Length: 134
Image (cartoon, rainbow, N blue to C red; front, side, top):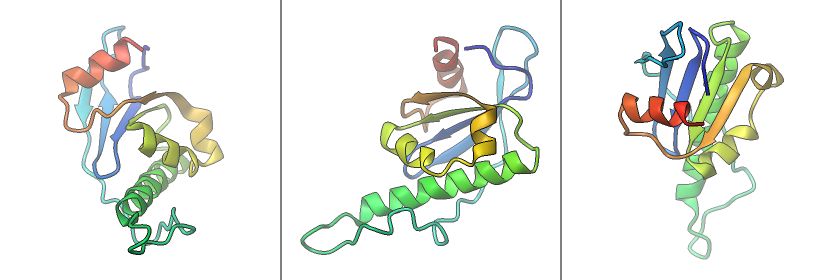
């Protein structure tokens, strides 16, 4: 997959979130890390239907879903403010599924691609390689 210069790459799972930007204007992808964003998990109740109890100890999944909803909120706001004009999302499969539930229609229009793979904690070179082979 080739990305235009200035495209944003979001890499996420249920606990971590990083943003990168393509700074290359040729066919060779060159990502640079962007400032970390604080993900609001308090105001995003993605798993409202799920209740944790001793019979159903699913609080960990609820926390991950809320984190994904917080990521989507950040991305949606940046898209709506015009700060992101092209976006690739790389996320662990479960996190990607939850993210999709919260995409704003404007985010969907600038989405260049999605990759269902957990690359949080991987090097920029690994991320570039994965995008390049997609």
